[in-house]
Image 1: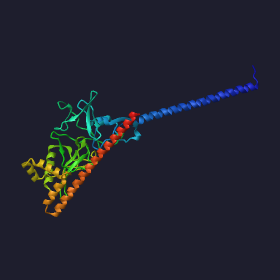
Image 2: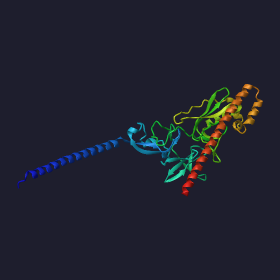
Image 3: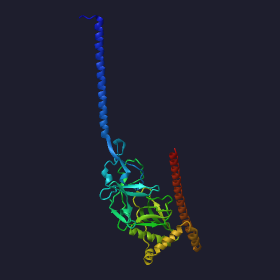
Image 4: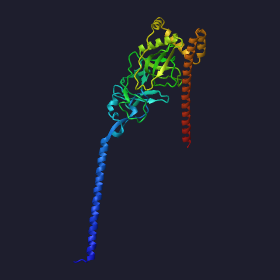
Length: 378
């Protein structure tokens, strides 16, 4: 049947429109397919560029042992992390503290910074206790029922102070250098002049300063523990692990400091113990002092007691006045007086520092308690 020109024109227009629509639809589909292909390609490239790294879950001090609970695994773009970032768990595991069965040792910290080790075994968290008579030997249980635990002896330590979420790199960690020998014992000393802000976990040298200006290193790079007395950190006492040789060397220095007027036995702290090597001992044993120790074993305890009395703030005035009254030479008197003033200032500053810490802790506790009470009421 013949069609008039108007119908033919309308049909052609319709067919042309359909053709144009098909072309546009095809172009849109082709564009979407191209976009999806590009997105898939970028996604694959992004997956290929991802790498596994380990980051810290908490702040860590320089020289501090890093246990397994202190790091977490993360997937990040390799372009955003250093090339030496630790991505191999075995690097960490080879240094991590474990027992011989492979159970992890974790660390928990009290508000005063005191660290407690726990053994994670069979779903239980068992506190590790260290034998007082044999540092480096650990057990679980109580004094009447001890189960000794053999730990790996190569811990991972931080070279510098690190913040939480820091990516662990091979330049930031090191193998621990603390080796516990059979003759290592924990020793307490209360006759040393301490830095104002010394805290548990710091690394120190113990030095002897003589009136001549010679300054000897007696004991090098030891980790300090500040004992608590009735829940308050001691102002004048520290604990360190020493070998038998180090104990004898320090005993010699204690007696010499006691005998030499104006001598000062003091503690010097490392700034970055994870990176700094032990300074090394420079103190030469005084043969006269050693002979005195051998002839009178009680002299070491006498010297320790006398030095504590000399350095103790409460007794200082009487000791200094007594010593000054016996001094005949004005130069020696001035030297002794200045040394005693230096020691007094050091101990007074440390006392103020610890009292400030206690006050801050008390204020924080009170503020927390007030907040909790308000929330409960609401």
